Picture 1 (cartoon, rainbow, N blue to C red):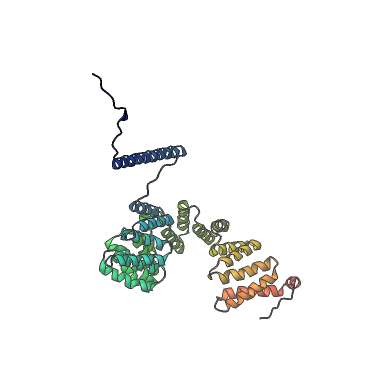
Picture 2: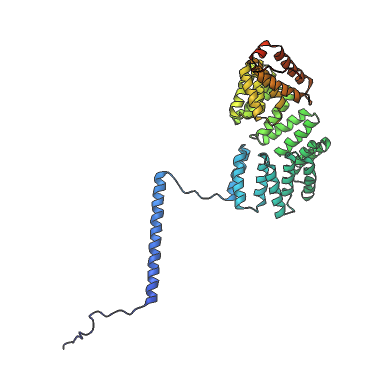
Amino acid sequence: MKIRRDYTQPFFRQPKRHPIRNMFFAAVLVLLLGLAILWQLDAVKGIVETFAGVSATATPQPSELAARASAQFIQGDIAGAEGLLAKAVAERPKDIAYLYQHGRVLIELGRYDDARELGGAIIAIDARDVRGFALKAAAFTWSGQPTDAIPIALSALELNPRFVPLYATLARAYVDDQRWADGLDAGERGLSISGDDADLNRAYAYALSSVGAYSDAITHLQRAIELRPAYLPTHFELAGLYLARDEDQSAIDLYDHILAIDPRNARAMLRLCLAYRKVGEFARALGFCEDSVTNDAADPEAQFQLGLLYYRERRFEQSRDAFQQCLEHDDGVYNLSCRYRLGLSHYYTGDCTSGWTLLRDSLDLARAGADEGTLSNILQGLDAIEADPQCIEQAAEPISFQD
């Protein structure tokens, strides 16, 4: 039997069309293709990073940033700690712990207004949290406004009478407000709660020093250093007390220890300069003063002390340069001291005109309230120029010696 084929129909039957199903399969195909491309890109990136020695770094969590900041602060890297805490606060702007830590570090850096703002931010978040008031009180104290700090700290104690940092702030603020007995009392109350707070031991030492109890102050500064070995301000305060008590070698040893922690610390070099000058070792003193200005040429005190040592050795060109730098960077403290010595240095290097002008300016300043020794030195310098015939001969115009 033969089967007849109908040649009017195609040999292969046309499939039925399903447009929705076709669109679905097309979308799946595109998705798979995209994933494959991304996988390939990641693989290529991984290969490139491997050969380049680069690996992807996950963004640290705020808690990790704060922990690293605490470690850096303990090690003495205050600026590094501040940067990390700023990032933590940016990630968690309402976290009071991070705000408070950041504010404490800002105070260490002298950014008191910023610290007060953070204290206000904490109070706005939770007016019952003692840390906001403590931060504001500490910022006022360190910025030289103890009368503003004291009532804030006292009101904070009503919220939490066992918050030790408040007693450290009060001890210092009372002393700055010349309420020495209250400063001692605040320190003692804090220590009765905890003797293991470095800031409180330091503040109590400050109160003890204010009443001349230097031996006890030294004991508490030593304790503060034990609790925070890399915190340099306490080292400087202890060394200063050693010098005041004529324990000069102990002070020198401590400044050397500071340089072991921070080899480029210009302030420690300057203090060594002064310590060696005090004990009569002028060559060593000069070397440390030179090192100090090498590391911080903008410090007017260092330039002043360096100028004094050069002047003592009659190295007047170098003393002139140092006193000139002192004047250029001075904020008013060394204006008269450096000015009249600069005038004398000019005179001894042969520049009578500059010497006379600076000494005349210095005389006007000295008459406004300088001590008799300074006034006498200026007048002697003017008399020397007036009596020196070479000064008249070298002047382009005659110098007027009339008062």
